[in-house]
Length: 479
Image (cartoon, rainbow, N blue to C red; front, side, top):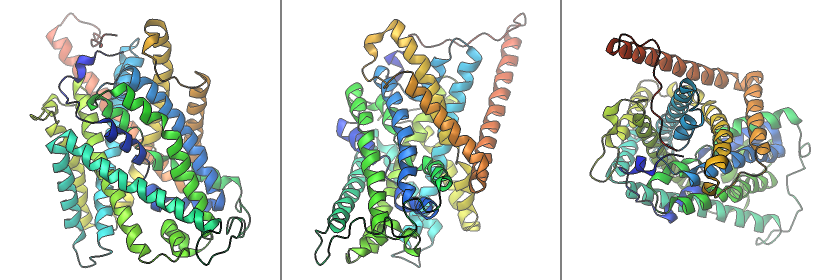
């Protein structure tokens, strides 16, 4: 794969405990605590299947990424893999890398803006008179500063943020399990509680289950950050291998198990399901439950904001390596932090916060719709890259394959087919069509930018070498 020298200007300051906790907490965010209510309201208790279907696809993608990241822990992770996978076609190599890197960056800058705005809304629960756009600005400035200081400071903040999230969801599962199985004070066991009491397990049929699986796709996005962090991690092969292998436990425990407990304790068709985890704990008569869960959700939001700044800046830094982003953004601080990439990546967040001041009700829905299908684009390119690079590795360096994709290449193709099915479903389900078309439009705009940039570079090359009739392929990294 790539030469390790490509990472020499970034500091390997992240410790294995940072990476492990990033992996554990990577899928715990607003999607789990709040967004899951939308899926439950539509599919009923069968929302468990929605999260299981999507979770299975994420498990396959993370296994593929784990295979590539342990074989070659490079800056930019799957951006670099996409470029290398299609190197037999210079055009496809540049296109795949450009589209993957910029779509991933676009996803996270949207998340940065969203989480800063949501964080202010959560703080307004305790401080209703605060000016929310100012609070959003303060949150973004604080976590930008954390990332600017050093990668180690980012790792420490994320370690504690993720620790709190993991502990909270673990306590939730433990307490609700005690209640459901009759071990809670003054409560007798009642079988599966509300699971089958309101129209059965699948009250609305299969269509809401499948549409719920589509909606849940974005909730899992973030697990792949550990592969981006590989370039700044001590002992990356061991750390990333362990982190990616734990994704099965995370999906089953954090999503499937907790959603199962929620639908057992709270009727899926009641207004209370709008706040699923708060309502489930209210059944247990735990005091101050709303304050507790609001605090936990706030931590989850700050964690996503912190991770978003890191992921976007590192991907942007990787894009500069091959001329896919302005070289001026490559500059590093004395601590090995890509300062300009961080500031540029947070710029959209600041603009969105200012926009929320002028249109507080308009900016949030627009941002949510803007990044709906981007994750799927990225995951499909990851799967295609893994298939090509795995075959290449088997020919030239089989000893580099330390984490193997199960049943290769069949499960890799299953993952691709599954994600294409999700795309198709999004185009057909009325409630998801807007997100689908926003995603298509985003990809089309990026493609046009790529073609314009490529054409400009070709003109420059021909001006420098008048006799040159064709574009000379860019030099690829050595294998």
